[in-house]
Structures are given as structure tokens and as C-alpha cells.
Length: 403
Length: 120
Image (cartoon, chains in turn red, brown):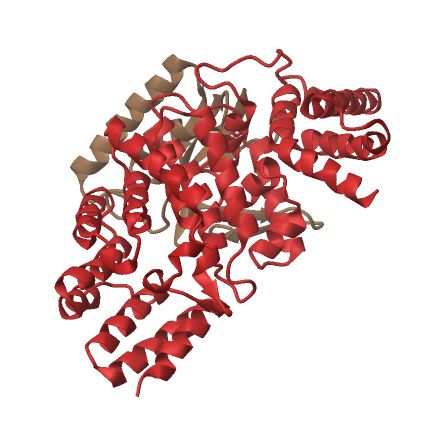
């Protein structure tokens, strides 16, 4: 029985984004969509264990939830004529392809990641409505109390309704910028999973997995966008190293990872995506980051890494994104080509004293230069600037090894 | 369609040329705002618009007691106040935000976009 419940919940989670998106389009209201979806889950939990999972579970859920939503609207129509007026402008047309894009989930993704919403609300709404995560799960992932997260989501949904944040894919002229906002949300979710900012689990596979799942959907919906392919490739090539990245509760840096533990399937898929991007030849930030990760995952051992290729890619990335964080990562690669002294000079002039990775890079370069006491100070600063338990453990060990 | 308030925020303290650095800047902003207003009318978004006198001309009235109490000056003493506004009728927030961006550029101030909760 418990296994059957879990099976129903798994199907529900997989279908959730599609279900909510079609209900929002049909009824023009996120709350109605969520409530109807919840009622459909209850119905499925009652019926499916007895009668078996229907051949088209998504269709079953959509019809059931749609009927529940209509019931609710009828009830409210009788009770409250004024409330009913709010539903007058809902879109009751059958599910039609919208231009080149054939999925309601894409509209919902653009609504959830609308620039008028606070960045943390965009992430939360995306995970809630498209990922099907519960408010409790999202709150736990971002280490805030559940009530705080619930308020954040409620407030954002209220703004969407009251200010009429549109439920559509932006016009072609606005698409690149708006797509950038969507990809930024997915990348943030992934990064939070890959190196959690809090002091809980150092790596949160449920977040990296969810980001990849949503990025796969985005790619399915926009197969012609090379940046989406780049973002997916970047995530897959990073995810491939996840298992090898923590050992005995300590972070293992790229150069020291057991490459036999890397996920070969993910790497092959990631490399295919990078090759696809190169063929399209419209480079962007995520594509170049994916290419850098392709160089790393191409090397059988750390010493086989083609560092001149990595630095060349960082040069290209600097043209697209001239941020100090890119300059820091470039400097780390430069250290492998031109030595730690050259790299340290590059690192030291960056305005990143509040960023833990800057202290980590300095500590490592100072250690390699034999400037031990400065290295110790830099390790201390790095440890103080991160909450991630695996990173702290790794940095503490490195600091302890200095004599 | 939804009504949106596009409120222009600017410094509470007005200089000789309002919020502008020179007479020429002020006149250029007025001309650009006039042109933007014309466009709002032509495109059917226009409901109402106006510029406000400086916040120091405001009076706060509290009529909740038996006799109304008058206080000189604005309700909140802040560095930034509303200097003027548009009310537009737009199909959704994306359109309202685009109009706000144009209006902000024309008048030379930041614009807050806020939907009305119905109209009387």
C-alpha cells in the first residue's frame, strides 16, 4: 500500500508542472489551479491503488482537476457573484500550440520568472509550480522557516493576480532578455544544490536534479536556443562529478577527484550538447561555461587537462561577461599555465573580498608559493566566509597541513 | 484591461529648475513628457495624468476626530516624494512596465507601477 502511494506521488510530481500550467491557462488563476491539482491527487490516491494507474495518468489528472475546478467555480458563482467576475477573462480555448512553442509549462515558467517578482520569489515559485516541490521542501532547501517561504510564495502569487503579470511567452523582441531571467533562475537552483550555501547537507541532489529536469523541459520547448543547450550541458557536466566531489564529508577539488567515479553517461550527453552548440556558432555565457567543463571532463587525469584551451575559453567568456568572478576563475586556470605568482597578481586586484571563493583561490596560490603565514590567514578568511560543511572541512584540512 | 498608477518619484527638495540641472534640461523633459502624453492618448492607454507642486505645499488633514486636524507639510518626511503621475489603462503588467519605462525616460525620474484595486 505504501509503495502504491509512493508510485502515485511520483507520477503526480512528474505531471505536476504540466497539470498546473494547463489549469492556469484554462482558469486564469494560480490558486484555483493548485487547489484543483491537490484534489486530483487525493482522488488518484483513492482510485489508483485499487484500479491501477490509468494508461494516461497526466490526462486523467487534467480531466479530474479540471472538473474539480469547474465545481468550485460553480459553487462560488452561486455564493458570490462579484467573485465570479474575477474569472470572466479566463481563457477557455482548448489546448492550442502557441506559435513555435507548444507547451503551457513554458508560459508558466516565464510568469514565475517575471522580472517584476523578487528574485527569491522567482526561484520559489518555479520550484513550487513547475517542480511540484512542497512549500516545506523549498523552505528546507533554502534554509528559511516554512512560514517565511509560504508568505513569500503567497505574496508573489497575489502580485501576479493583482498586477496582471501576463501568462504568455514573451514576444520575439523581448525573448532573449526574458529567457536570460528564466535561465538565471534554473542556474541558481542548480548551484544551490551543487554547493549549498547553508550548513546543512553540503550537496543537495534534489535541487540539482530538479534544475536539470526543468532545464530539459526548457530545451524540449526551445530546441533552437543554443544557450539553453549550453545551460543543460553545463549542468550535466557538473552533475556528472557530483558523487566524486565529496569524500568523508570533505569537498574534493577537481584535480584530486577520482575520475572513475564520474558519471560517464552524463558526460557523453554533455559533450554532445557542447558539440551541438559549437556547430550553431552563436556563443553565449552558458555555452562557454559548458565548453570549459567539457575540457575538464575530457581529460583522463587532471594532469592531462588542456589548460591553454581552458584559459582561451575564459578569455572568450570575459568578452561576454566581464565580471570579477569570471576574472577569478580565469586566474585559477592561468595558475596552471603561467604559475601561481602570475595568477596571484591577477587575483589580488579583484574587488572580491566578500566572496569566499576569492579567499579560497588566494589561500591555494599563497600555499603553492610557500607564503605560509599569508596562506593560513587566507584559509581562515575562506573558512569564515562559507557555511558549507564539506568546504569548511576541506579548507580546515588544507590549513592544518601548513607548517 | 487594468488601471495602473505610474507614480514618478523625485527628490523632496526642489531646486530652481525643479529636479533638473538646468533650464534647458527642464524644458527638454517637459517636451519629452508632452510627446509621451500624446502617444498615450493616441494608443488608447491614457486615463489621467498630472504633475504635483512640491511636497512642502502639502497639508495633512485628519478628519477622524470630532474636528478635523490640519498639519502643514507631507504625511511622511522623506527624501523622495511623488512628483507626478499617470493613470493608464493597459491589458497587462508587461504593457504597463513598458509605458513606465518610456515615461521614466521622458520625465527623467524613477516610476513606480501599481495596479488599482478597482475604480469607484
